[in-house]
Length: 403
Image 1 (cartoon, one colour):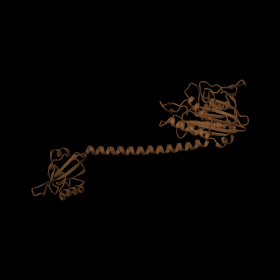
Image 2 (cartoon, one colour):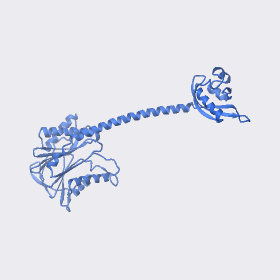
Image 3 (tube, helix red, strand yellow):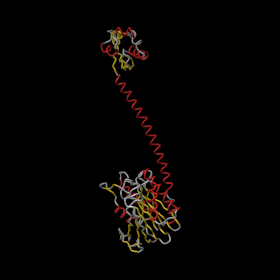
Image 4 (cartoon, one colour):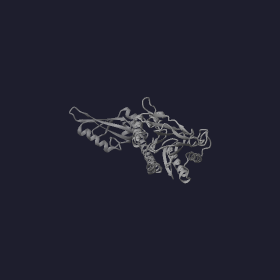
Protein backbone atom coordinates (compact mmCIF):
# COMPACT_ATOMS: atom_id res chain seq x y z
CA UNK A 1 0.00 0.00 0.00
CA UNK A 2 0.94 3.64 -0.46
CA UNK A 3 0.34 6.27 2.23
CA UNK A 4 0.67 10.03 2.29
CA UNK A 5 2.76 11.70 4.98
CA UNK A 6 -0.29 11.84 7.29
CA UNK A 7 -0.71 8.10 7.05
CA UNK A 8 -3.79 8.21 4.84
CA UNK A 9 -4.35 5.35 2.41
CA UNK A 10 -3.65 6.28 -1.21
CA UNK A 11 -3.49 2.85 -2.86
CA UNK A 12 -3.53 -0.87 -2.08
CA UNK A 13 -2.50 -3.69 -4.39
CA UNK A 14 -4.29 -6.92 -5.28
CA UNK A 15 -2.19 -8.99 -2.89
CA UNK A 16 -3.37 -6.82 0.02
CA UNK A 17 -7.00 -7.17 -1.11
CA UNK A 18 -6.67 -10.97 -1.35
CA UNK A 19 -4.98 -11.39 2.03
CA UNK A 20 -7.06 -8.89 4.08
CA UNK A 21 -10.36 -9.12 2.20
CA UNK A 22 -10.48 -5.32 1.83
CA UNK A 23 -10.03 -3.15 -1.23
CA UNK A 24 -9.25 0.56 -0.85
CA UNK A 25 -12.93 1.56 -0.75
CA UNK A 26 -14.06 -1.02 1.84
CA UNK A 27 -10.89 -0.47 3.88
CA UNK A 28 -11.48 3.27 4.29
CA UNK A 29 -15.23 2.81 4.76
CA UNK A 30 -15.07 0.05 7.37
CA UNK A 31 -11.70 0.56 9.07
CA UNK A 32 -10.87 4.23 8.61
CA UNK A 33 -9.05 6.31 6.06
CA UNK A 34 -5.59 6.20 7.66
CA UNK A 35 -3.26 3.56 8.97
CA UNK A 36 -3.68 4.72 12.59
CA UNK A 37 -7.42 4.09 12.67
CA UNK A 38 -7.16 0.61 11.20
CA UNK A 39 -4.67 -0.70 13.74
CA UNK A 40 -4.86 -1.54 17.42
CA UNK A 41 -1.12 -0.93 17.52
CA UNK A 42 -1.53 2.70 16.53
CA UNK A 43 1.13 3.91 18.99
CA UNK A 44 3.65 1.49 17.51
CA UNK A 45 2.76 2.64 13.98
CA UNK A 46 3.03 6.32 14.95
CA UNK A 47 6.49 5.66 16.38
CA UNK A 48 7.69 4.04 13.15
CA UNK A 49 6.02 6.70 10.96
CA UNK A 50 7.99 9.32 12.90
CA UNK A 51 11.21 7.38 12.31
CA UNK A 52 10.53 7.47 8.56
CA UNK A 53 9.54 11.19 8.53
CA UNK A 54 12.30 12.46 10.83
CA UNK A 55 15.20 10.19 9.89
CA UNK A 56 14.08 9.80 6.26
CA UNK A 57 14.90 6.08 6.36
CA UNK A 58 13.02 2.81 6.18
CA UNK A 59 11.93 0.92 9.28
CA UNK A 60 10.21 -2.40 10.02
CA UNK A 61 7.99 -3.81 12.74
CA UNK A 62 5.63 -6.71 13.36
CA UNK A 63 1.92 -6.44 14.01
CA UNK A 64 -1.12 -8.58 14.70
CA UNK A 65 -4.38 -7.95 12.84
CA UNK A 66 -7.67 -9.57 11.89
CA UNK A 67 -8.79 -10.01 8.28
CA UNK A 68 -12.28 -9.62 6.87
CA UNK A 69 -13.18 -13.18 7.91
CA UNK A 70 -12.03 -12.67 11.51
CA UNK A 71 -8.83 -14.73 11.10
CA UNK A 72 -5.88 -13.51 13.18
CA UNK A 73 -2.85 -12.75 10.99
CA UNK A 74 0.69 -11.69 11.73
CA UNK A 75 2.56 -9.33 9.46
CA UNK A 76 5.88 -7.63 9.15
CA UNK A 77 5.43 -4.10 7.89
CA UNK A 78 8.25 -2.20 6.28
CA UNK A 79 7.73 1.56 5.87
CA UNK A 80 9.92 3.15 3.18
CA UNK A 81 9.95 6.87 2.22
CA UNK A 82 9.38 8.05 -1.38
CA UNK A 83 11.06 11.40 -2.16
CA UNK A 84 10.20 14.20 -4.65
CA UNK A 85 12.82 15.95 -6.73
CA UNK A 86 13.63 18.33 -3.89
CA UNK A 87 14.33 15.43 -1.49
CA UNK A 88 11.17 15.84 0.50
CA UNK A 89 9.02 12.87 1.47
CA UNK A 90 5.86 12.87 -0.58
CA UNK A 91 4.62 9.31 0.08
CA UNK A 92 5.35 6.30 2.21
CA UNK A 93 5.28 2.78 0.78
CA UNK A 94 4.07 0.20 3.29
CA UNK A 95 5.04 -3.37 2.37
CA UNK A 96 3.27 -5.99 4.41
CA UNK A 97 4.74 -9.51 4.55
CA UNK A 98 2.70 -12.40 5.88
CA UNK A 99 4.68 -14.00 8.74
CA UNK A 100 1.73 -15.86 10.27
CA UNK A 101 3.26 -19.31 9.69
CA UNK A 102 6.62 -18.14 11.03
CA UNK A 103 5.00 -16.71 14.16
CA UNK A 104 2.96 -19.88 14.67
CA UNK A 105 6.09 -21.98 14.27
CA UNK A 106 7.93 -19.79 16.79
CA UNK A 107 5.03 -20.06 19.24
CA UNK A 108 4.91 -23.83 18.77
CA UNK A 109 8.67 -24.07 19.38
CA UNK A 110 8.25 -21.87 22.45
CA UNK A 111 5.48 -24.13 23.79
CA UNK A 112 7.58 -27.23 23.09
CA UNK A 113 10.53 -25.63 24.89
CA UNK A 114 8.28 -24.90 27.86
CA UNK A 115 7.07 -28.54 27.86
CA UNK A 116 10.66 -29.81 27.59
CA UNK A 117 11.75 -27.43 30.34
CA UNK A 118 8.98 -28.70 32.64
CA UNK A 119 9.84 -32.31 31.78
CA UNK A 120 13.52 -31.57 32.49
CA UNK A 121 12.61 -30.05 35.85
CA UNK A 122 10.45 -33.09 36.63
CA UNK A 123 13.25 -35.50 35.66
CA UNK A 124 15.73 -33.49 37.75
CA UNK A 125 13.33 -33.66 40.72
CA UNK A 126 12.99 -37.43 40.24
CA UNK A 127 16.77 -37.82 39.92
CA UNK A 128 17.34 -35.72 43.05
CA UNK A 129 14.79 -37.77 44.98
CA UNK A 130 16.32 -41.00 43.65
CA UNK A 131 19.84 -39.83 44.53
CA UNK A 132 18.70 -38.97 48.04
CA UNK A 133 17.02 -42.38 48.34
CA UNK A 134 20.15 -44.17 47.09
CA UNK A 135 22.33 -42.12 49.46
CA UNK A 136 20.00 -43.08 52.30
CA UNK A 137 20.09 -46.73 51.19
CA UNK A 138 23.91 -46.52 51.15
CA UNK A 139 23.95 -45.27 54.73
CA UNK A 140 21.55 -48.05 55.79
CA UNK A 141 23.68 -50.70 54.08
CA UNK A 142 26.88 -49.32 55.61
CA UNK A 143 25.26 -49.30 59.04
CA UNK A 144 24.48 -53.04 58.96
CA UNK A 145 27.98 -54.09 57.88
CA UNK A 146 30.02 -55.53 60.78
CA UNK A 147 32.16 -53.74 63.36
CA UNK A 148 35.83 -53.80 62.32
CA UNK A 149 36.97 -54.01 65.94
CA UNK A 150 35.90 -57.69 66.03
CA UNK A 151 38.20 -58.64 63.15
CA UNK A 152 41.02 -56.37 64.37
CA UNK A 153 41.06 -57.96 67.82
CA UNK A 154 40.95 -61.57 66.59
CA UNK A 155 43.35 -61.64 63.63
CA UNK A 156 47.00 -60.64 63.17
CA UNK A 157 46.17 -58.58 60.08
CA UNK A 158 43.28 -58.17 57.66
CA UNK A 159 42.00 -56.14 54.73
CA UNK A 160 38.63 -55.62 53.08
CA UNK A 161 38.50 -54.54 49.45
CA UNK A 162 34.90 -53.42 48.90
CA UNK A 163 34.05 -51.85 45.52
CA UNK A 164 30.32 -51.63 44.74
CA UNK A 165 29.49 -51.24 41.05
CA UNK A 166 26.92 -48.63 42.08
CA UNK A 167 26.56 -46.69 45.32
CA UNK A 168 24.93 -49.66 46.98
CA UNK A 169 26.13 -53.23 46.57
CA UNK A 170 24.86 -56.76 46.08
CA UNK A 171 28.06 -58.02 47.73
CA UNK A 172 28.46 -58.00 51.47
CA UNK A 173 30.98 -59.10 54.06
CA UNK A 174 30.04 -60.09 57.58
CA UNK A 175 31.65 -61.52 60.69
CA UNK A 176 30.82 -62.21 64.32
CA UNK A 177 32.58 -63.80 67.26
CA UNK A 178 30.71 -66.47 69.22
CA UNK A 179 32.77 -67.60 72.22
CA UNK A 180 36.07 -68.80 70.66
CA UNK A 181 34.72 -69.05 67.11
CA UNK A 182 35.11 -66.33 64.51
CA UNK A 183 32.43 -66.67 61.82
CA UNK A 184 33.31 -64.83 58.59
CA UNK A 185 31.63 -64.68 55.19
CA UNK A 186 31.73 -62.87 51.86
CA UNK A 187 28.53 -63.11 49.86
CA UNK A 188 27.53 -62.19 46.33
CA UNK A 189 23.78 -61.62 45.99
CA UNK A 190 21.76 -61.75 42.81
CA UNK A 191 22.21 -58.50 40.88
CA UNK A 192 23.85 -55.30 42.00
CA UNK A 193 22.66 -51.81 42.89
CA UNK A 194 19.31 -51.48 44.68
CA UNK A 195 18.04 -55.09 44.02
CA UNK A 196 21.34 -56.58 45.17
CA UNK A 197 21.42 -54.29 48.21
CA UNK A 198 17.98 -55.51 49.32
CA UNK A 199 19.18 -59.11 49.05
CA UNK A 200 22.36 -58.31 50.99
CA UNK A 201 20.39 -56.71 53.83
CA UNK A 202 18.10 -59.74 53.89
CA UNK A 203 21.14 -62.03 54.07
CA UNK A 204 22.80 -60.11 56.90
CA UNK A 205 19.55 -60.01 58.83
CA UNK A 206 19.17 -63.81 58.67
CA UNK A 207 22.85 -64.41 59.47
CA UNK A 208 22.44 -62.36 62.65
CA UNK A 209 19.38 -64.39 63.52
CA UNK A 210 21.07 -67.76 62.91
CA UNK A 211 24.51 -67.01 64.39
CA UNK A 212 23.77 -64.58 67.20
CA UNK A 213 20.35 -65.71 68.37
CA UNK A 214 20.45 -69.42 67.56
CA UNK A 215 24.16 -69.66 68.44
CA UNK A 216 25.03 -71.66 65.31
CA UNK A 217 28.69 -71.57 64.21
CA UNK A 218 28.96 -74.61 61.93
CA UNK A 219 29.11 -73.23 58.35
CA UNK A 220 27.12 -75.93 56.55
CA UNK A 221 24.30 -75.67 59.12
CA UNK A 222 24.31 -71.88 58.76
CA UNK A 223 23.99 -72.17 54.96
CA UNK A 224 21.22 -74.76 55.20
CA UNK A 225 19.23 -72.56 57.59
CA UNK A 226 19.94 -69.42 55.54
CA UNK A 227 18.76 -71.11 52.33
CA UNK A 228 15.52 -72.16 54.04
CA UNK A 229 14.85 -68.57 55.18
CA UNK A 230 15.70 -67.06 51.77
CA UNK A 231 13.35 -69.47 49.97
CA UNK A 232 10.60 -68.72 52.48
CA UNK A 233 11.07 -64.93 52.28
CA UNK A 234 11.18 -64.80 48.47
CA UNK A 235 8.31 -67.31 48.16
CA UNK A 236 10.39 -69.51 45.86
CA UNK A 237 8.48 -72.65 44.94
CA UNK A 238 10.55 -74.79 42.55
CA UNK A 239 14.04 -75.30 41.22
CA UNK A 240 13.35 -75.01 37.48
CA UNK A 241 15.36 -71.80 37.16
CA UNK A 242 12.43 -69.42 36.97
CA UNK A 243 13.31 -67.81 40.29
CA UNK A 244 17.05 -67.27 40.44
CA UNK A 245 17.20 -64.80 43.32
CA UNK A 246 19.62 -65.87 46.00
CA UNK A 247 23.30 -65.58 46.88
CA UNK A 248 26.66 -67.24 46.38
CA UNK A 249 28.85 -67.24 49.47
CA UNK A 250 31.91 -68.64 51.17
CA UNK A 251 31.58 -69.00 54.95
CA UNK A 252 34.20 -70.03 57.48
CA UNK A 253 34.16 -70.64 61.21
CA UNK A 254 37.61 -70.37 62.81
CA UNK A 255 38.41 -71.72 66.27
CA UNK A 256 40.67 -69.01 67.67
CA UNK A 257 42.32 -71.42 70.16
CA UNK A 258 43.06 -74.43 67.96
CA UNK A 259 43.14 -72.74 64.51
CA UNK A 260 40.79 -75.40 63.20
CA UNK A 261 38.76 -73.93 60.37
CA UNK A 262 35.40 -75.16 59.12
CA UNK A 263 34.23 -74.09 55.67
CA UNK A 264 31.06 -74.40 53.62
CA UNK A 265 30.55 -72.75 50.28
CA UNK A 266 27.66 -72.00 47.96
CA UNK A 267 29.36 -71.59 44.55
CA UNK A 268 32.23 -69.57 46.12
CA UNK A 269 35.60 -71.06 47.13
CA UNK A 270 38.02 -70.06 49.86
CA UNK A 271 41.79 -69.70 49.34
CA UNK A 272 44.35 -70.61 51.99
CA UNK A 273 47.96 -69.44 51.59
CA UNK A 274 50.55 -71.09 53.83
CA UNK A 275 54.26 -71.96 53.98
CA UNK A 276 53.38 -75.69 54.13
CA UNK A 277 53.01 -77.75 50.98
CA UNK A 278 50.12 -79.77 52.44
CA UNK A 279 47.23 -79.05 54.80
CA UNK A 280 45.50 -81.65 57.02
CA UNK A 281 41.95 -82.02 55.77
CA UNK A 282 39.18 -83.86 57.58
CA UNK A 283 36.86 -85.63 55.17
CA UNK A 284 33.15 -86.31 55.68
CA UNK A 285 34.13 -89.82 56.91
CA UNK A 286 36.17 -88.25 59.73
CA UNK A 287 39.42 -89.36 58.09
CA UNK A 288 42.31 -86.90 57.89
CA UNK A 289 44.02 -86.58 54.52
CA UNK A 290 46.53 -84.09 53.17
CA UNK A 291 45.37 -81.85 50.33
CA UNK A 292 47.71 -80.50 47.65
CA UNK A 293 48.10 -76.82 46.64
CA UNK A 294 46.69 -75.51 43.34
CA UNK A 295 49.31 -72.73 43.03
CA UNK A 296 52.94 -72.72 44.19
CA UNK A 297 55.47 -69.92 44.53
CA UNK A 298 58.82 -71.59 45.29
CA UNK A 299 60.63 -68.27 45.41
CA UNK A 300 58.47 -67.18 48.34
CA UNK A 301 58.04 -70.74 49.63
CA UNK A 302 54.27 -70.12 49.54
CA UNK A 303 51.45 -72.47 48.60
CA UNK A 304 47.84 -71.64 47.72
CA UNK A 305 45.08 -74.14 48.48
CA UNK A 306 41.56 -73.81 47.11
CA UNK A 307 38.71 -75.40 49.06
CA UNK A 308 35.91 -75.91 46.57
CA UNK A 309 32.25 -75.08 47.31
CA UNK A 310 29.04 -76.93 46.60
CA UNK A 311 27.74 -76.02 43.16
CA UNK A 312 24.43 -74.59 44.31
CA UNK A 313 23.44 -71.13 45.54
CA UNK A 314 21.72 -70.08 48.73
CA UNK A 315 18.24 -70.07 47.24
CA UNK A 316 15.96 -72.30 45.22
CA UNK A 317 17.84 -74.52 42.79
CA UNK A 318 17.38 -77.67 40.76
CA UNK A 319 19.76 -79.42 43.20
CA UNK A 320 18.89 -78.97 46.88
CA UNK A 321 21.43 -81.15 48.70
CA UNK A 322 22.73 -80.25 52.13
CA UNK A 323 25.89 -78.16 52.10
CA UNK A 324 29.20 -79.93 52.68
CA UNK A 325 31.26 -79.26 55.79
CA UNK A 326 35.04 -78.99 55.22
CA UNK A 327 37.47 -79.12 58.17
CA UNK A 328 41.07 -77.93 57.99
CA UNK A 329 43.82 -77.37 60.52
CA UNK A 330 45.66 -74.06 60.06
CA UNK A 331 48.59 -72.40 61.82
CA UNK A 332 49.54 -68.87 62.90
CA UNK A 333 50.75 -66.92 59.87
CA UNK A 334 48.41 -68.70 57.48
CA UNK A 335 46.27 -66.42 55.33
CA UNK A 336 42.63 -66.85 54.34
CA UNK A 337 40.97 -65.13 51.35
CA UNK A 338 37.21 -64.88 50.79
CA UNK A 339 35.85 -63.11 47.70
CA UNK A 340 32.99 -62.59 45.28
CA UNK A 341 33.40 -63.25 41.54
CA UNK A 342 33.52 -59.53 40.71
CA UNK A 343 37.33 -59.36 40.52
CA UNK A 344 37.81 -62.36 38.23
CA UNK A 345 34.79 -61.42 36.07
CA UNK A 346 35.96 -57.84 35.43
CA UNK A 347 36.40 -57.12 31.72
CA UNK A 348 39.43 -55.17 30.55
CA UNK A 349 43.06 -55.51 29.51
CA UNK A 350 44.28 -56.23 25.99
CA UNK A 351 41.41 -57.73 24.00
CA UNK A 352 38.80 -56.66 26.55
CA UNK A 353 38.46 -60.03 28.31
CA UNK A 354 37.74 -61.30 31.83
CA UNK A 355 40.50 -61.19 34.45
CA UNK A 356 39.69 -64.88 35.20
CA UNK A 357 39.99 -67.00 38.33
CA UNK A 358 43.40 -68.54 37.63
CA UNK A 359 44.96 -65.08 37.13
CA UNK A 360 43.31 -63.94 40.36
CA UNK A 361 44.72 -66.96 42.24
CA UNK A 362 48.22 -66.30 40.92
CA UNK A 363 47.92 -62.62 41.88
CA UNK A 364 46.82 -63.51 45.44
CA UNK A 365 49.74 -65.91 45.87
CA UNK A 366 52.28 -63.44 44.43
CA UNK A 367 51.34 -60.70 46.92
CA UNK A 368 50.55 -62.91 49.93
CA UNK A 369 53.95 -62.30 51.57
CA UNK A 370 53.23 -58.55 51.80
CA UNK A 371 51.39 -56.79 54.65
CA UNK A 372 47.62 -57.03 54.34
CA UNK A 373 47.08 -53.29 53.76
CA UNK A 374 49.65 -53.37 50.96
CA UNK A 375 47.89 -56.37 49.41
CA UNK A 376 44.69 -54.34 49.38
CA UNK A 377 46.44 -51.47 47.57
CA UNK A 378 47.96 -53.81 44.97
CA UNK A 379 44.60 -55.47 44.29
CA UNK A 380 42.89 -52.09 43.89
CA UNK A 381 45.62 -50.81 41.57
CA UNK A 382 45.65 -54.02 39.51
CA UNK A 383 41.89 -54.09 38.90
CA UNK A 384 41.86 -50.35 38.18
CA UNK A 385 44.57 -50.71 35.52
CA UNK A 386 42.87 -53.82 34.11
CA UNK A 387 39.48 -52.08 33.91
CA UNK A 388 40.95 -48.89 32.44
CA UNK A 389 38.24 -46.63 31.06
CA UNK A 390 35.70 -49.44 30.87
CA UNK A 391 32.70 -49.77 33.16
CA UNK A 392 32.98 -51.88 36.28
CA UNK A 393 31.34 -55.22 35.47
CA UNK A 394 30.03 -56.20 38.90
CA UNK A 395 30.41 -55.54 42.61
CA UNK A 396 33.89 -56.50 43.84
CA UNK A 397 34.73 -57.77 47.32
CA UNK A 398 37.93 -59.43 48.53
CA UNK A 399 38.58 -60.11 52.22
CA UNK A 400 41.99 -61.22 53.51
CA UNK A 401 42.83 -62.50 57.03
CA UNK A 402 46.12 -63.51 58.58
CA UNK A 403 46.09 -65.75 61.65
